[in-house]
Image (cartoon, rainbow, N blue to C red; front, side, top):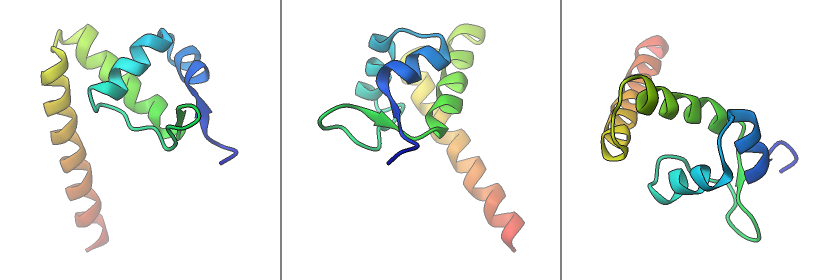
Length: 86
């Protein structure tokens, strides 16, 4: 659990407010590894938040759309990994 990041650290590393990170959790866009007693995130969360911010800020996609796009991008990543392993 030593490599998990606290909420404030995730916010600082991504240049966002902790409340925005919490909103992303509530919307199901990011998933903490641990919820109690505090939110703790795997390091991969940083890259996912950058992706979310690009979708929101650069492309103007709303929160619901961001969730759909992330699901599709995750599926593409899965399929690409499967192809590489064949």
